[in-house]
Image 1 (cartoon, rainbow, N blue to C red):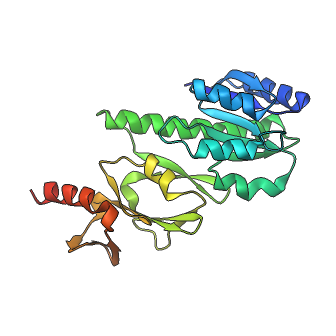
Image 2: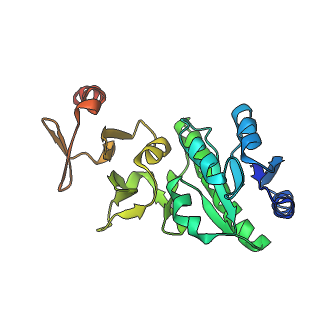
Image 3: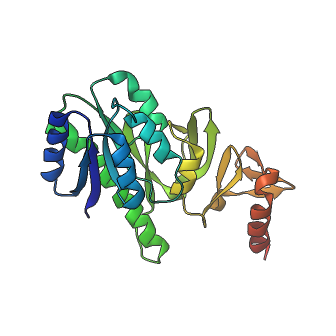
Length: 245
């Protein structure tokens, strides 16, 4: 599997180094390089790219501003981002725009490869999930950012997902405390197969296999009672009618 990527950095030496690292990594394919965010955005609007190695501090359109624009896009074609910067104060802000990782300059090839491998694992998991939905037998899992690592989570173990400020809480089978991840419920919803998970509230996604009972407009999963809000009631009733049948 080859991951199509671009590198964006206004410093020529830094751009050259990242390009060199990409070219010597077997599972990465360098599609283009840019020294500013505006040209990079124009290229991304016309081409399908899976991964950005993106500097943060750039004139006109910063890397963080570009990331926010891309974060607002819908669908599966939104590229993942690995930030490359000399300033560590942007780390938390980077995770808020769902960045895959954060490389602090100057970084070695070993550090670069570790970050690139996270991207490979993400797209490998996504590919297997797609194949599974097409009827092939694969272990079903996703990778979730928990603190500064990617944690492998089996889909069958996810009871429900709860929004919590800028984070989400993923409640799992056989685990007393949920996993806490700095990402959005919207991003999590896009990762989960719609035939097994359903958004029933602005703050909750439920695992349909884990529903114990339904009472009026509430779903009971173990000891947790989740209200089905008005905006999601029609979709849930459609599922419920099939379930009763």
